[in-house]
Image 1 (cartoon, rainbow, N blue to C red):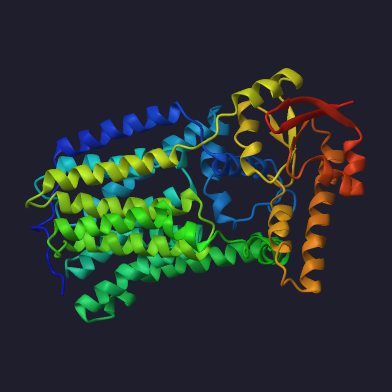
Image 2 (image 1 turned 90 degrees about the vertical axis):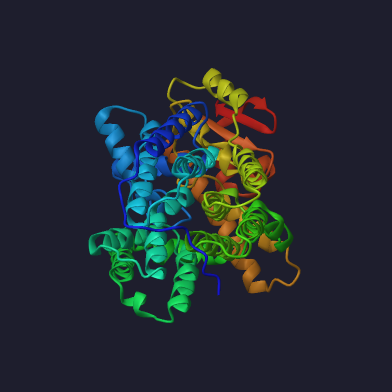
Length: 484
């Protein structure tokens, strides 16, 4: 059995230098975010949070493919920003950065003392949690990882038979519950390390520990909230997701060769090599968490970069913990770890900067334009709408229902009944878009080449709604339609 550990002693307060390193990296992360933009998902969820605070009803007046937790995460930042007269994006970044610092502090209080290289570990962890996400900063998976760290720290301490204060265990359970309600698949990132801990101790007593009971209560409370406050998620959205969204998966080749799998696998090999096959308990838990996060991403099957971030980050944390231990090949291991981290950071820096499209919208529309789009590309309208201080008037962020239906309609083995269901979903998507255009009279309709004017013409209600508009300008594959 792998039993190598760091040298542990009684918990003590972390000295000042590691906190200075964390503060320096946090400041660099805030500068990094000020030079970029929050990606399409976060921009859209902030928009939905604003609509909710204005009285809209989720899954009826505005639709999101994810459960309510994805939206509720951003409501506090948006509400506070409105109260203070600040931009929600800036406050979201600041609050997530504070959450990262609080999470590290909480996990640090639960874990045994850091090794001699505490400053190196602290700076590396801050980089992994604050700079590595790049344009994925404040994504749900980023927040979920931050919430799950204290729970992973509790699992480490339980595995080593070290005492954990009841208050710390319960607060870690609350944070872990938040991680699970964000995306239930992520329970795998806690279940695998917990199973390892149970096998190591040959006991299932941890299942009755305060942190797991608290986590279960948080999940149960959230489920009750959704049932009572968002019944449309079960009656309307979930059936549609089962039909058109959930079946759409990326290829296994792309999933298994993407960063979500390859970087954690490489990091695991490096960690075991550095440890001479005897990693410390924190490193093992971090690797198992990475495996759980990667499995969760494979279950979702979309292959999005944000789905892979927690696995990559957890695996890099494992290398960091091993590099902190005395031994040989530290310099080479550090070089390999830094290369992996920089490669991942570069991969995550992919938020489109549609400056030409922004300039065209500002030239053709009023100062605060109302926008809507005809596109399968979710990033077309977001964060563009927020860039121009506009208002997205669509019930949906894009034509995701039609896009996913088209993917399923390509299957030659599709039954006639399934084909009719997908065609009906497409017609409903077009009808909803037509109703939004008629009701809200957007100043600009962004029409992508796909599905484009041909798709508009195929649906009479949408074609009639678009008769009020004409092509005004073209930027790359996007045509901006303005009122006649």
